Every structure is written in structure tokens, then in C-alpha cells.
Length: 422
RNA sequence: GGAGAAGUGGCAGAGUGGUCGAAUGCACUAGUCUUGAAAACUAGCGACUGUCAUAGGUCCGGGGGUUCGAAUCCCUCCUUCUCCGCCA
Image (cartoon, rainbow, N blue to C red; front, side, top):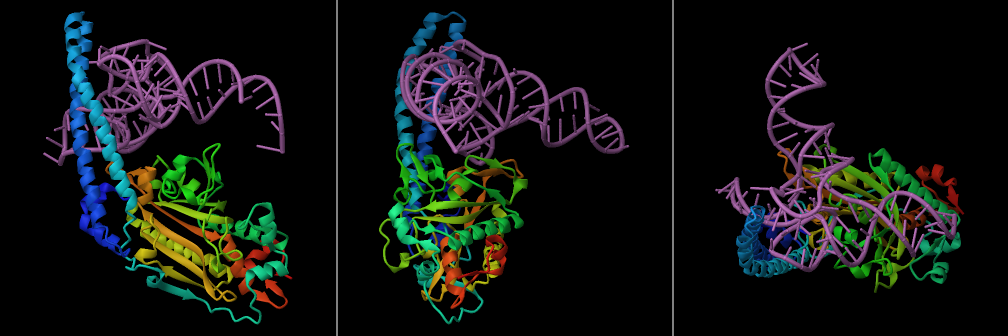
């Protein structure tokens, strides 16, 4: 959520930034400020009552110490009203805080300066396009290639678990494992510390990264133990830093981790979810960065370049989109999407998304650093996929197919141990 | 899963109902001394909220309760340790 103090400091600026999402947030912003005023007023009132009651309690303590029992008992009588008062005010304060939070939770992140205004993906800006779309003599979609070469068995997954839980086998499994290892090695070379996080998280972590309470239905939930299957490695990795005050000198903090991801994706059917396009379980290598507020946008560019370097090394043609306000995720201030053209499906496949959240996540996480004035300040968080496996698998299978087989990108050959899938 | 013990500031560790937000040590920061450093000495040193700045308020694993007053008593949850059981 946005910091109420930031909103207070530059209300018009925040409203203007939010307007780039194609919606007017003036009312919500005003509500938030009004509720915060109310919260503060209640707090001051409560503090005064508590201060008085504290001083009386201390006085009683001193009277007892001086054995003036009767005077002490007489003083006790005075505290009844104060106590009642503080109880009422305490409840009012809780209510005021809850009301403020409820409004703040509804306000998305304010898009950054470079983000174009717009309502839908039609308004996204194509930043660059790299390489030529492949010109193939054979154009099978990946699900047919998977069947032809026995790489991924979707039907078998249905039998074992259900739709959206594919079984990778043989060279399919090996290619995927090769990609994961290669991504992790590249991450390490780029200065990211490798993390292998838990893939089940507790409620506090879900709240920390914003999946809870709103998006509860998108995660698999284990009721017996009240744990959630992670929808992305971002959740456990970012939560490493929940309630942490990092050292300013440690910036940028760079983490990278592979994990399975679980998404219920309730209600999505049709050709967009065919094959590997959308799954309930998939693997992803995620990169996470914590940044000093002063240079988080530089780091966003670094992350974008890094992801692009992976795509280039794989020999994939791609384009980079700067998402417009309306298409930028709720928590993000600025997002680049990387898309690979699928010749067979005649559509762009989103293979990565890198975002700068500014303080939006750090606020909920209570992720701070001590600045040069000795004051605690919220850090900026960024993350991105580097990369998500299924669509990269699909891109490789579809774009490197030949009548003689699928040609494995050179960088992966040492990792998977074969040059061609036939 | 069963039995027992424990959770206090960055760390260690006092504190069992009344000037305790918390002794002491270490670590850290600044100063004195020194050519410089070390040592020694002096001072400072938790977080949140709040104020123009003070003041004030909250926080001793989390939540709730008893009391005029809770780190201290009660309930509950979580975590860690020891022993037993089970086990990749």
C-alpha cells in the first residue's frame, strides 16, 4: 500500500500519477487523508487519557511506598472513569486504523514518471523489438511437439492431479532442468545470491507481499495447517526481509531463486490456456532486489537488460513492453513485460515481467533501512521472472523446430547433454 | 504425536506486581589522548507513533485477561531446546 505520509506530502502529485491508470482516485485519496486525520485525533485523545492514568498510577505507587494506604485507596476511585474512557478510545482508535487500512488497500501503486497513461494493453508502449520473427518450414504448436517427441504429457497430469499439472518426461524433463540450472548459474554470475525458499508460506507472509487478504482465492490453501502454496517465489524470497532493517551499505540486495509456483487460475479456459500457456503448477526462476529509493529505477533497467540477455543467449526473438498505467499490476509502479513471438500460435507469449514496487511492498513488509540521518526509511523492492519455464519451453520448442527435430540452443547443450530433440 | 524447560534491546544477560523502556557486559557511534592506530577515559546508542520542535503514548515472542498499576500473575497461540515415539 501507499505510505499515507507520501500521500499527505504530495496529494495532487499522487492523484495525477494514479490517474494514469485510467481511473480517478481523488475520492479514495481524500477519504484516506480524512480517516488518517481522525486516527491521529483519536490517538492524541487516547494518549492524553493514558498519560493522566499513568501519572495517577505512579502517584498511588508512591503513596503505598510511603505507607499512606488510605490516601492511595482514595486515589484509586479517580481512575474508574479514566479507564472506561481509555477503553472506549482504544476501540475507536482500532476502528479508525482499520477504516484507514481498508481505504489504503483499495488504492493501487502510483505509476512512475515514465509510465504512459492508458487503460488496457492496447496502450502499452513497445520499447524495443529484438531479432527477426522466425521463418519456419514447419509450424506445429508446442502441445503437438510435446506429443510427437513425448516431452510433456498433459493427459497423464490430468490423471494424477488434474488439468494444468503436466508431467514432463524424458528430454522434456531434462530440457526444463537444464534451463533452471542455466538460469540459476547466470543469476549467480550477475551477482544474485541463490535462495531455495519454502514453497508453503504462512498467513503473515501472504499478507506481507499482498496476496492476502484480497487475493486469497488465487492460492492453494492447506486448511489443516493454514499454509498457502506460493504463487511465485517472490512471496517467500521477499518475505525474508519482512520486519527487517537492512544496512544502507548493503544495497542493492540481490536474490535469485528457483521454485515451483502454484496458481488456482479459477475460471480461465480456452485457447489462451492451451498446453503450457497457463498452468496450475509451473517452475520459475525469480529475481528479487532491494534498493535504495534513490536508484531503484536504474536497477529496474538493469533487471530488464539482464532478462533480455537471457533471451538473447537463448537465441530467441523478443520484444519489450512498458506497461501503461491501466495494465500495470496493482502493487507495481512500473513494469516491463518481455514477450516472445510464437510463430505456431501466432501470438506473443509473456515470458517475463519485471517491476519496481517502490515502497508499496516495503510498507506492508516493514522493510526499512537506516538512512544517513539515522532515521529509518522504507526501501524499494523490485522483482522479475528470470525466467518462467513453461512459456520459455514453448518458445524454444516452437521456434527452433525443424522437420529433423528441435534444435537445442547452444548455451543449454552442456546442461542437458543433447543437441537435438528428435 | 507424548513429557518437560525456555522465549527480555544488535548479541549476551539481570530483573517475579509500583519512578523498569528495562541493570551490567560486549558490539556500535562521537569526542579526549595519540603523528596515526590500539588501549584508556568521556558521552551517546532499540522500535513505532506523535510534535515546527518539545511533551505525550505504545512495545519485554504474538493475542487476550486480572489490577489503580504487569517484563513480572492468569488464559491461549507460536517458536526454540531436552527426552521419548515415528521417519526421507
